[in-house]
Image (cartoon, rainbow, N blue to C red; front, side, top):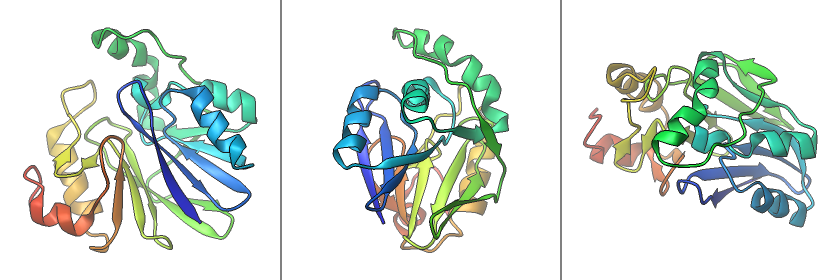
Length: 207
């Protein structure tokens, strides 16, 4: 299995493609529908589902088109439904054009296991950046898709609607910092890091 990062143009957001030789899952396709579609088709992959860490506009902009083209479901945490509905209000605050707001087909909960072939993807509910923010942990391949919860020596903003700094800090301390130190952290923006590095160097959430 491979996990590959596509950095998109809207707000330099990271979209991740997790795949074997035949099938893939798309995480957080925030924009650049044609680029993502071409990337997947060039690898001759069949898309199984689209998983969202949260529903801010820069993480959902290509979901609708990808859902329609590949005929797959989009999934998020139920607590981000209101955030999805207000996504374009946030985009306007950045002076950006509206994005397509996707319909969500299924909701997952904390500690749910999503099966992808023989791999288990664990949903970790990490409220703070938004009420329905989640991370996805793949123990077998040693990585965590952290969305906008945890970055390289930084954390997600909490000044958006449904954000909470106290919740964010609690989520990181009690749910992410307990993962193995060598877990690779793949954030929604910027470069990868590890749990060990963040525990030792993140100035916002100390151990």
